[in-house]
Length: 463
Image (cartoon, rainbow, N blue to C red):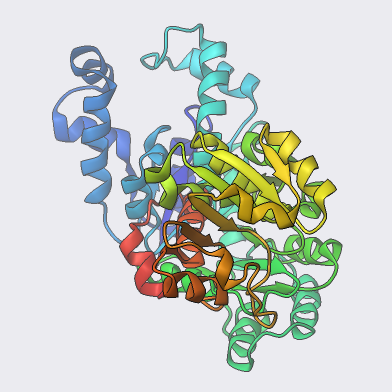
C-alpha cells in the first residue's frame, strides 16, 4: 500500500489522526518528531535550546530521507514541508493529506501541550505569523485536505479513508468533465489515457488532475513536461489540456474534477483573475495577470510565474536599454521583470494607447511601433503572439535587427521563430522562448508540489 503522509501545522491533529489511520489500516505509524528524538538521543526542546532550529531541521531531513517507501502512515513535523528535499522524499509514491484547523483550535491545543516557541511572539501571534508564512508550503503538500477544527480524530480518519477509496469527485462530475475534454483537440492516445484516469474500470481514485487552460492550447508542451515530472518524482497526477473559448467553462470543469492546478495561457491570463479566490502580490499589481492557479482546501489562488521565467535568463543584462514588443498579459509580466532588473524600458504596441497604459503602470516609456529604429536597444523582448504557429510572422523586419542586440522571443512554438532565425543570421545573442517556459514551469511545479526541480531535468523533458 502507498504511504500515507500527514502534513500540517502543530496542533492540527497529525499524531492522533495518524493513530486512527494506522489502526484502521493495520499499518505502523511513524512520527518524524519522535524519530528525530530517537536518532539524536535528545528531546526536541533540548535540540532547539542547545543547537537551534537549524540543527533540528538537519536531523529532520535525515530522518525523512530514510523513511520506508510504503505500507506505513507517517506524521510529519509542522515545518517539515518547508524544505524542498523533504517534499521530494515525502511525495514519492505517497498520498499526502494536509490537516488544517482554525487559529482558535490550534491555540487551544498548543496551550495544553506546549512546545518550544519558534519566534519571540506571544503564542497566538506566532501561530498567525507562521501559518501565513507557511501557507503556500502546506498547500503544496496537499493531495487532499481535512479540516480538523471541530472534528474528532476518528471522524477525520474516516474522511481520509473516504478520499483514499473514492477520491474527491463523483462519477457524474467525471463523466461531465470527460464530455468537455472530448470537445477539445486532445490527441487520441492522450484522450484515451485521460478517459481511463477519469472513468476507467481500473481507475485509481487517488489520481489527481492538472492541466493547461487556454484557447488555443493544443500546441502546449506543458502536458509532456508535467507528466514526465510526475513519473520522475513518483507523483500520482495526470496533466492534460483544458481547451475552450470560454474561461468560465474551463474553471467549472477544473472544479468538477477537483483539479490540483492549472497553467493558464493565452487569452485567459487576465480574465481568469475573476475566477480565483485570491491573487498573490506579484500577479495582482502591477502585473494584473495570472498564469498559475493552485487549488487546495477549497481555495483557488492565482500566481504569476511568467515574470520569473522572463527575468532568469536576463540577469546578466541588468540596467540595459530594452524594447518590449506587445502590451498583453505576457507583456505585463515581462515589463515587471525588466523593471525589476533596473532596465530602461520602452513598450511598443500596434495600438499605442495600449502600450502607454501598460508603460504607465510600470513607470517606463512607450512609443509608436515605428519608433523602434530610433531607440537602438540593447535588448528586444517579443511578448506578442507573432511567430506562434500558425501565425509565423516576425514582429520585426531583418533590417531592424542589429548584430549588437540581444533578442529574446517569448514565443516557444516553434522553438526557433522567424524573429530568432533572423536575429541569429545577424549574429545577435538570442534567447529562445523555451527558456521562459522552463523557468516559469519550474516555479509552477514548486508552487504545486514544493519540489525544486533542477533546470537540467526540465530541459531533458522539453528539448
